[in-house]
Amino acid sequence: MSENARQQNETASRGAAGNPYVRRAQLPGSDLASEANEFISSVEALPTYRSTIGCIVPAYNEEESIGEVLESLVNQTRLPDVIHVIVNNTSDRTVEIAAEYAGVHTRETDGVEQFTEVFIHDIGKNPDKKVGALNYGFTLIDGLDYMLGVDGDTVADSRAIEFLEAEISSDTRIGGISAIYSIDDRPFSGIVAPFLIAGQRAQFAAFNMQNMLRGRNMAVLGGQYSIFAIKALRDAMRENHQSTPWVKDSEVEDSLLSLQIKSAGYLTKISARARADVGGMTTVRGLDAQQVKWNYGAIELMWPGQRGDTKGQPFHPNLRLRWWENFSMLLNAVTRVLFMVFLAASLSISAFVFSPLWLIPPFVAILLNLRIALSMKNRTAKDVLFAVLLFPAEIYMWIRIGHFFRAWSKFFSRKQVDNWAEQAKAERGSGNAHLAPILFAVAFIAALVALWLILPVMVQSTILWIGWPVVGAITILQTLTMFGSLVRRHHGYKV
Image 1: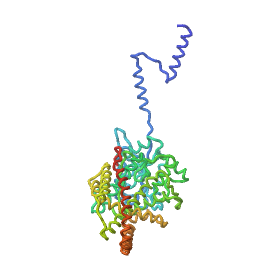
Image 2: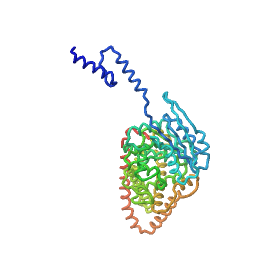
Image 3: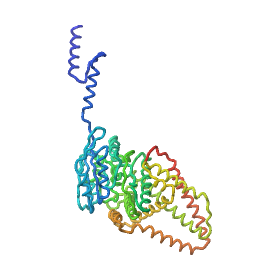
Image 4: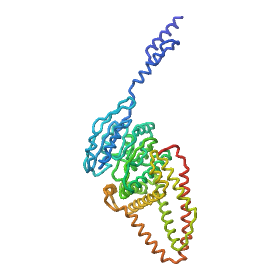
């Protein structure tokens, strides 16, 4: 070997020895495999980053459910790093029951030990109610990666947090993910409560499936069980000049925050696997107050212009489904009212002729209701019966129509009403506002009967001659829409 070649070889050797990223090739039979195993072991021993999740549970008079909610949280396969229960305006034993879970909780999953700490905060009288509790909780977990909001009556599947974390951390564009909600179907006595629970379960299932089939884009990240990226909340606050994520001037704080997160450039999604059961309304009075509050708040967000501090956003992408829901509800109301009116009018002058074609719409409706029931992962016999018997679903639709008109009439009256207080009062069994649609319907029917009786027979015949084709055309349109939903693929989704 020449002197020059020898010097180059020595230089290369020194360089390889001093640089861990440069390795000399070795012949088979060397200890390269051993070195590779050592390198892999050292990499596996490096600490991996684990995202942090802070759970906020706003609780108001939740003594019947808060224990079960906390039991569910401390038994998740992925424990939150911290759980803050924010008790506000309570007058029952919520604090005492929740306090039994205060402290450190550990759990071992697949050989890995996790722990979480539960803190109970009784903030006393809070004028901002749930919004104030959520914002108070947010200040306690602001430095973490994610916030999990859980209502004081919502119990989730044991892997819910695991699924939510995996989904939201998989894409930095996601600002929040809602669990798949259903209504707690525990045994209820009587007739009214099981009927209302079955109706709410069907309503939630249909809504969830709509969002699933829209690319899993969720219009409303419901506070019942949703995870939020703290960065997304911060960006939404900054863009809207807010010091807190939630604002008290909206009837539907969850919907408004979802719009703000979407406007800040993030995605709002529904989970594909995480599931949670929320407490349902077991009285017509309570259901009316809840649904009117939801509908009223949604109308405020949809309506153009400024309503107090809430600016309407009629063209916001998250509100497209809301517009469709309201239009569909109006169409349902018009069809049913006109059919009943013209049927009664035709019978009064012996002009009604039955056609088997009128059986097609209810038959398609039964099939659609049944398909929704069968799409429920945890369906029960009551869910199926609610669908196939038709009359329970039809009665529940009339109840929802009453909520629809009550919400719109309150909106147009511009009367300032605390709908949160109205709901709380209704849940306590006070108030009779839920009877307003019935009283209005009775007065409306009485007026129609009086008017019909004074009309000449020729005019009555003309009205029916024009009216029935109008009802028929609307019914055909609705039937085609239902049939389209009936044959649409669900892509394996379960709600």
